[in-house]
Image (cartoon, rainbow, N blue to C red):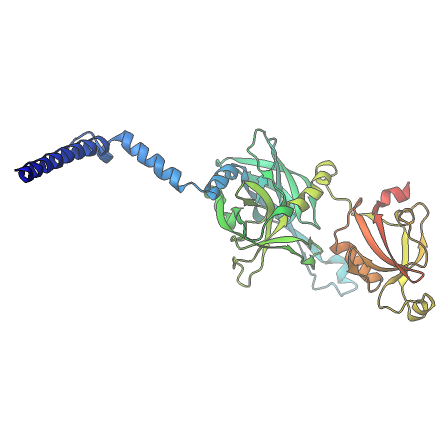
Length: 394
């Protein structure tokens, strides 16, 4: 008898459990019992599901892109290109007077990218994007087109500063390029192949592949040093756009690629934002960067006979033969008959090497130069500040 009662009780509890389960399903799964007003057809439920999915899709990268995208611009430039049309009579002493070579100017279109760094419209880009520009038109992320004026440009470092007409612009914060980590996520944002003109900026994602990539002085005398390398795709038209970290900060300016095909192969290079900062003040106040330096040093190549007389048995070096009074070199403690062995860690082989080092080190007025010199058999380190040639003339 007790066994029968026990079985009956088990059945009752089972029925109660099923009933409670049905109630729970009906409460938490609308439409389960044939309710017409529930399920995915319910706008409220659809909105809740949509919010959940959008939240799940949000990442540090998408948040950073959303933050900086309004401050990235496409740049369309009309440049004046000059070509020389050679006269067939240029070697003729008579007819050459009447039919000389002709200089022909024609407008050409160029495009690139840029990023706004202040609410009043100051915008950074590469100098090669706006070089010899007669007109600069900027496309904003919201589709508007505004005119821009060139505030300042530095050919050597390939950096230019524009001013957009109007104000109250979204802008990007500049980060610290010295703090970037190899392998950290970054985004290259800009206007590849002019696609920005029809829509919003393009975004490519990659990592910091390397830093401190030095290319030195190029044939055109631009100087690319301490470049940041990334595998985020950089293509023609991306020049001047920002390389952004996941905090939404510009850590570099996209500038060039290494490619045999002309397209991205994962070897992109960007100017560190701290290098941009170093010239930004001059671009804002002077419109250019002052590289007309003066040191007051007169040097000559070190001959074997002079080296023996000075007791110098090494290779290379240049001899200081004269110092201008009250010059940066004299104030730093340099002396006649010192042998300059290196500048900023770069070995000096001859006087031509001094010019090359000054160019590749991108020395500006006010920069410090660290000289390693030989004096009476001792190696000394002397710090000198590059002066301005204007000071010499006053």
